[in-house]
Length: 611
Ligand code: AGP
Image (cartoon, rainbow, N blue to C red; front, side):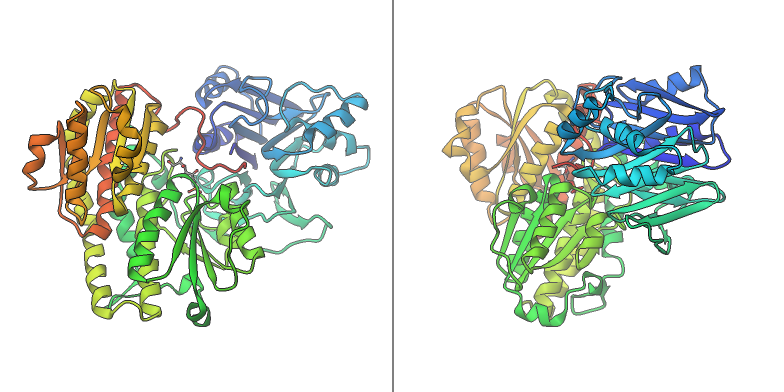
């Protein structure tokens, strides 16, 4: 988490840094700060809280500068106040550092540096970088050499940007374990944690790998390994554009992203559907035919919303490809000695491709000899570079911290993967695959129909937003959607919500039912409709109130439920993609009516790059 940005060139640095921080604010928004070289001096400005405070401060006292670094923070060590905000400086205030990651040996280094007379000004782990660099930055030593020596003492993860008053025409950046991207402009160069921060300036980028150091000047970028050897790497051209990362007239990114979902499904299918026969072109997944023959077991590994996509994926792969599939939290998988081997395919699902636990799970799977595949949204992210194959979800940049369109894109990609595995292993007939694919291609139109229910959902939200607890119930392939609906509500409205498989309700949660806790039941037409109707009866007979998602035309439900959202008829295996949309809108409208900060909910960060 945390976002870092850096600029060097001929334009005014401060507006560029602030604009970059604005695009990175989804990575953390506890505090923000920047340091620039202005008229030969290092100047630093920091503010507790959101970026707009720093923007106001810079408007009141502008700083002319052509080079600088900036940071937006998600606190790990030390409270979110001004002292702990980045950049951190050495004691003399002549060099400054921004850091994304965690220093694991910071106590040891802290003690060592204090004993040598270094005075710490914050409670952060990151400040050790500033003092360590200072320690090695002796007369005659170049900044990059001092930085290299300093980071060789650090245990943990980092991407850092460094500037020094002594060498004003230079930025130095290093990566180990946290994302770092360099932007190549016309006589101007950038560093950033993520692509959206660069899009309004350039679409040509260089991905920095672990243990590489970059020196940026207004003449160019030099990329070196830790032994000082020059690295030649071709820039990557990013296909996203700056407009995609704007709100485009919507009040919030989250709402825009919910509305983009029909297009996202189309884009994720595009180019992968091979004519008749239901065959899927997934060569990009890099799964060799010989491996497919020996494949015995699939593991879907992810965190949060992406883990919910994995739960749906299990149903899809088991029913379409008949392969035993396990779903794991990445944070559990990495520590539990999973029984994966050469005949296992481990699929890492991640929007960002940078989630620390999922990345560690990927490495663990590779270490154990499994084949790895990333289902990922961010081109060039760490997971896509470390997995043996990648299946990209074409959701475009997702800025809202609560994931919506990336989830729907993941579900679409999992359908493709299940069809691909089923066809390649001859476990799914061509006619069954074709029928499935035809239905899948209708999904964008069905989502459009659901989006037309927005006003109804907003009205329902206006009656529910004051409640303190919610229970979400679903069965079968829609049980993960109950979890996802509850997570969306929790994340952005801070209302306590739980998702449950409806059949489990009577084994405990039923004790919670009373008139004050709305139950959201996913009850559209499926093989388990009768069962979930029984569960709704159980709630009603205990004085509970029910909001039901149902298939259009279900009259019976009107007698039972307090609120009803009618959805178009859809095949059961595709229903999660349809059902999640009203739940996203419900969470959104409840949060808006509670006055919550929808795109930047408290305590969260979009990509969780710490364990
Ligand atoms: C989603 O709304 C969450 N903010 C979060 O659960 C997220 O899905 C999780 O952190 C995983 O992120 P990833 O997909 O980028 O790996």
